[in-house]
Length: 274
Image (cartoon, rainbow, N blue to C red):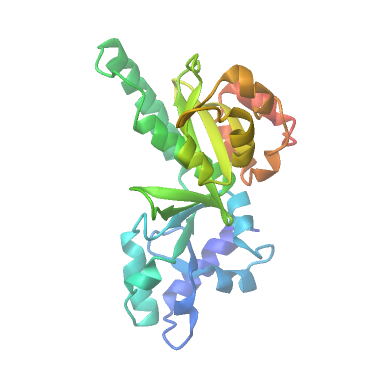
């Protein structure tokens, strides 16, 4: 799939209105080089050689956003102009938007945040490892595994899905894992099909990933109580650096290597033919 051809076709599609078509019923759209240009994936699959499904986009570095979760302000205006109709709330909940992130800007921002955090740590301002690292870790998983985020029906926030399989993500931030291990609520594991443990180094780069079937966790590690602690010693054999069992779940290997620590990237490079 040629990116220039894709962007050119999206721009061409956006220059004309399509009120007489039924493309307004589509639920998957792709953003072009301009934030104001979009086109239905169904239309692009007919026009772009090598593009036959959204997985091809993810393999090329595109990220999927649920419009209901991340309302791209320009999309509703574009939709109304293109199809001469407003985007209804019920329809908006089903819309998925694919776009190519600005990796350089993201990488530069992460580097800047790391420098800021170093100062805040040295001044004893940061007291725990919550919020920002968790959000970065969840974004990494979405980017690397092609996850889709949907508003949760059982709690505040969102749920992640790999196809029709629900995914639980746990983020561990630090150069070393707590001796107790990664803490997971048993109730969340029972509600999911897969559980991803992503280990983020202090510099916000990925230092390890552990991808497990949730029913396997319940059989092997659940024990008593409402909390499961996955210690490194218990799951190290399932780490991406040691096991290839779930490497096929990766749809964007270049993103995985790009945002990994040098040590982790070197361990993965051979698996992904780099």
